[in-house]
Amino acid sequence: MKVSVGVSNRHVHLNNDDYKLLFGDAPLTKRNDLTQPNTFASELTVTITGPKRSIENVRVLGPNRSYTQVEVSKTDAYSLGIDPPVRNSGDLLDAVEITITGPLGSITRNAAIIASRHIHVDKNIRHEHNLEGVEMVSVKINGEKGGIINNVYLKDSDEAYFEMHLDTDDANAHMLKQGDEVEIIL
Amino acid sequence: MKVSVGVSNRHVHLNNDDYKLLFGDAPLTKRNDLTQPNTFASELTVTITGPKRSIENVRVLGPNRSYTQVEVSKTDAYSLGIDPPVRNSGDLLDAVEITITGPLGSITRNAAIIASRHIHVDKNIRHEHNLEGVEMVSVKINGEKGGIINNVYLKDSDEAYFEMHLDTDDANAHMLKQGDEVEIIL
Image 1 (cartoon, rainbow over the protein chains, first blue to last red):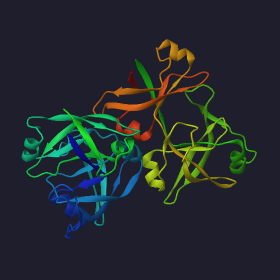
Image 2 (image 1 turned 30 degrees about the vertical axis):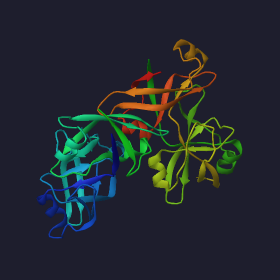
Image 3 (image 1 turned 60 degrees about the horizontal axis):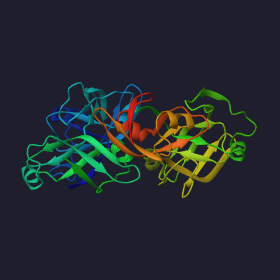
Image 4 (image 1 turned 45 degrees about the vertical axis):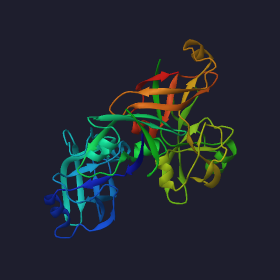
């Protein structure tokens, strides 16, 4: 079964308290909708800093969440000088320290992870595609730098757009871009 | 059968004429040996420039070759603003324009490629590992971001160190580092 690809560049989710520390009362204004329902890229960016280097212009996604999380690629991690674990979004076990700087100041949090490969699903999608009870799949990628990627988690939400999210390392290694189609292997 | 991984960061090979234009009579001094026999990372670096951006401190490898070639990852290519083809080293068909700057000046050449995944072999290695007549293999990678990568070319030389070379995108996407072991699938 086919699924389309969404490429996630490095980005930040903030909780309300951390948002306030970085941006005060400034509104989290939408720049553009993302493909998942009720999610958006905001107009706001931060700088993220590790022991080795900073990366500027890292997009803040909205709406705010109950946790602050910085999602980077392994390439970013080398550049920053950090060694984050591979985690599903929201699982901050052993997430590594990173400093986030906004217009009003800086915060340092154990918040940096490399996001697991995942496919967004909801009840209807699972039913429609015979994915009920499935936790993880592999995905076949065609092309000159194709292959199979393992450990692609199915991530449930109330209402999802059926799409596989890869970080820029996975996308670039396989020469994939936003909207490309790949094949789920059960 | 197992093979160890070598990670190739972006780098430049120069022909003698282009070397002279960039470095004049300065010697191509060795910084350190590479794993393949008779190859080395030199003390010299260049800046590479595409339409969008430059990348500094790009290592010149030695010895010089009969062709000038700039090997980048897809991540580098986005940064530079170029769209290079995936090619075996030395195959510069449709290689894209890039400017290389050294201490004595700049040259612009159709020289930028993304190197194909490849495994270095020689006659003895092919014989020892039953790889005679094999052109391409797949490779299985374990771990949290594991999978299978296809289109891994066997690259012959007179004397080789048995090793798979991946660019930083492939290595980082799969969380591989120099010296890791992976499994060849015939």
